[in-house]
Amino acid sequence: MIRTLVMLGFWAILLPVAALIGFPWTLITGDVSMLYRMTMWGAWTGVRLAGIQVRTVGLDKIDPARTYIFMSNHVSNVDPPILMPLIPRRMSIMVKKELFRVPVLARLMRFGSLVPVDRGNRESGIAAVRAAADVIHQGLNMTVYVEGHRSFDGKLLPFKKGPFYLAEECGVPIVPVTIVGTHYVMPKRRFGIKPGIVTVVFHQPIEPKDFGNRDCLMARVRKVIDSGLPADLQETNPTTTVDTKVHEGKASA
Image (cartoon, rainbow, N blue to C red; front, side, top):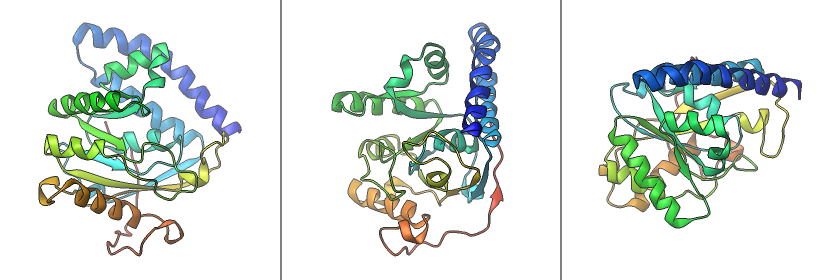
């Protein structure tokens, strides 16, 4: 509980500071890079203050010059502040629209070109895919928690189809991502954080054009993400071997 309060307290202090410094700079110059770097540094530092150590696998497979859609599993509220600072270059993310009701946070997310999603509204979901496509066409990476909801037990939930429409429409490669360990440090419906090690696996990029239809593409991405989970959480015996070379993660902006 104390670790969680330390993390949240740090973010509560940093948010108005970032607003006071970053907002005026962005409004005057039109450049969001400083505000983005402050946000990523704050996310990363908050996670470390909570006692979470982050290790990465496969970042060397990512070409920083290319634009990608990163599709990840999702089990915990600490997944975003762990994953986002690891993405090379500036990125956007599809987030639930309720977060846009928080005044300062909403302004920050709009500056960052984040895309709100109403998960219970099909028309809103289509609009979100179109908005995400506009962001990708600007050259920003996109991160999507492809299940749409957090998993209770760490096993994969059914995938949403929208992100795969997005990948096909934009013609950009998909990077499957497996986050392992956040179910232990902060599972769904638990407020307190336990110290621990989280591993983020970046798999080999997948080109949508290499698949004949969307269902095959979705099945392939699912199989790859599943292959990075611990054996007791996998739904199939994986044929994809995950590189076991582990590096300590670093924030990147």
